[in-house]
Amino acid sequence: MSASPGFLRILTAVRRLSRFAPLCLLALGVHAADPAPTGFQERLIADKYGYTFGVQAIDLDGDGDLDLTNVDIVGKNPSDASLLWFENNGRGEFQRHVMHTGENGWLERHALGDLNADGRTDVAVVSNRDGHLLWFEQPPRSPRDRWIRHEISRECPGAYDVRLGDLDGDGDLDAATAGYSSHTLAWYENPGKGKPTDNWNRHIVARNLAENRTVELVDFNGDGRPDLLAGSIGVSFATQGSAATPAQHGGLLAWFENPGDRDQWTRHIIDDQHRGVVHGHTADLDRDGDLDIVLARGMRPEHIPVELHELVWYENQGTSQRPGPWRRQVLAPLPSAFEAIAVDLDADGDLDVAATAWSLGDQVVWCENPGDPRHTWTKHVVREKYFAANQIIAADLDGDHRPDLIVTSDDGSRRVTGANELRWWRNRLTPPK
Image (cartoon, rainbow, N blue to C red):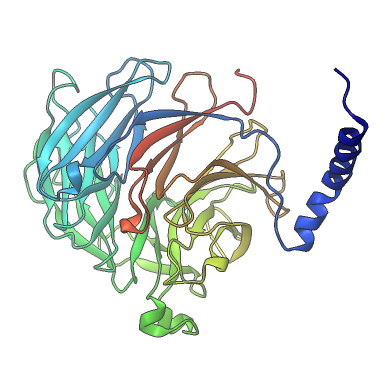
């Protein structure tokens, strides 16, 4: 059936206007949405959590694919926290297993490693509200059995995140923690093989890191000892006001040099001019052989105005032996920016950045590296309205040699009706290898 002349005139007018729509949006100060497909297929792993705030990937059952570890606080009841793992069938389909349940605490972010040197992966996890640091020993027969609970320390106030590495050079894995309410960066000394229930001695690396959330172990200066990357959000506007000087607001990004003698760590400032440091990670973005840093800055409007929330990277202008000075460069704006990681998502040989936006931002995004990271990056939305997205990791879950994205989401400290889910996004940006 042929269209009427009137309908054709309307259609022609709409087509003409559509050519100018992007210009109109730019004139209004609005960025046009990326018209390209996201390149990711969304898959739900688990939902209906009470609260979830942490995920890691590793092959727990030795079948050659990557499984996931995760936490839940059942009914958001602080006396009923669970540690979980999801068994991968090799195609990114998962079966849920309970490692531990009924924990009186608030299990959150965690790290994986062989803590007792028995050849099996264990889990170290913070118990946030109680200020405990725990580790769970993998049972000898099967990871499907209940895991064995041990305490690393009850002296971990404001426990928020944990990383594992051999900090004292004695061959076993120690634990480093960030304390968001204690404002403390600390590490805990592994008592050694065959002593899983012995005390782990606590060593303070730094105090007065206002709302310390970032902690990462990495050898910044190439001396063979893992150093610590740490960041502090800083105090809120209510405490010091929006015009607070760096000396007042307490925002800091720094690395702490491992001296090898346990206690006398040297602080090297990367940036003390900007508050709002949430989660940062190291990567060689410019491929010059030294470590740069990608960072999410924002999280909440109490610390910096939402219009200043952003993803940034710090270019290491030194060498792999003498890091710094650091050049700060903005990748993209991102309201409620929470965590950023570096990963080559489009298989073009350079590192892109994937990130989450927490409550009132509520997104998963990735930023495409232009080849030279000093040039303009393109931000793509993986998922809009993904409420209170928090931790993000990258791992190949379906065995196609492409990194996929895995994200947990909470309830945004009741700022939003959170998703409270564990999801993954299957990477379809390039053909499988």
